[in-house]
Image 1 (cartoon, one colour):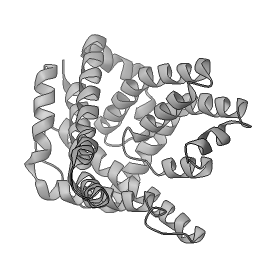
Image 2: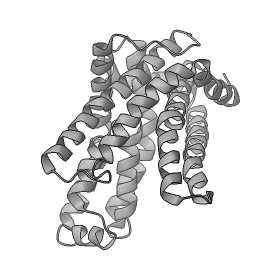
Image 3: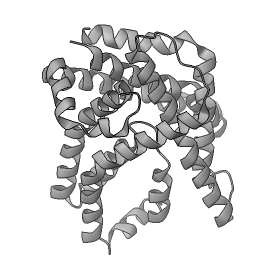
Length: 280
């Protein structure tokens, strides 16, 4: 399947069932609420931590449903899967998180090493921008949807690049190289009906990539990454251009983004992963 066909199919696929998009959106909205509990006036530390833990656990269901989409797409199903067997979704979501953690571990170690070298100054630098160091780490722990763990690390490494260019650049290069491999590993795991160890069968995964073609994989990755980020920026652009009450407008855009736009983008993305994996 050509890259153009993959993109068109993936853009259309989420529209097959708006109810399921909204169901996924409600789950993502719950995560957004957990992440924003401090902005919603939650000042009690215990309650705040409970919100964080709840958001972290709920994130596994997002991962689990996206993995279900990946599996059904590999089985040539053109409709969104049902929301059922929630225990299985939770288990699959945990598997994705573990696989992501293993693949991104070198980048995390680079990031932590960079932070260690600048321990005395990094929290102070963040405070200049009104960012609490501990809150930054905790807030991003619960971003367990597919790709967001990588986006957080890439963003953090980019931020640090102005202070520790050698280490952060190495981390970013690693992420750029490893993310496509990680996505093919997820597809391979889905192809083996969720067998965790199949995500680390590197010779088989590399063989699949050779079958797809490294050029096609890179072309797909750059194309989908560009489209995803372009569409991801739409809510922020709408909020910026809105002429009505900024706070009300921001809340409306945030709500609609969590309920509709983000689930659409996540489904588009994971569908494209399945299609490129199946392509020749």
